[in-house]
Image (tube, rainbow, N blue to C red; front, side):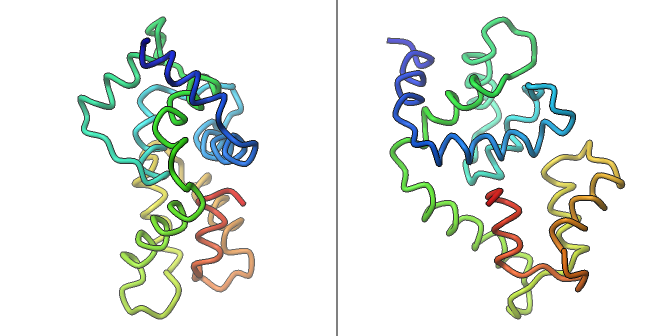
Length: 162
């Protein structure tokens, strides 16, 4: 059976929560609600989800799921792709631990929060094409209390879409 076939099997095993989580990640990058993302964004999303791939493996993965070579990945293709390697993971505990580790990297003093400027750097690293206005909008949403800092709960909420 092909890997795409395996992925479709994996997709059918996803819980509603997993599909919703994948949709939130997808929507973070489909800012204009076009219903697709550029294939070049897949690596960024996967890294956000705690899944790192070598460039050649990532290209192979994209090639398998972008069968028409359009360079566009619809949500169903994205979900099938991600499902092929996360179905067997305990996604909530794993995701939280991955995000906690990422948070610790930026919480250099260990005081339980990161500066909005660090968050801006994280978001820019995830999507180098994001505009300053989009960054301002995302940060205003995340730092709802206007404190200039983001605690782990706010960070977790932003990254997991919950």
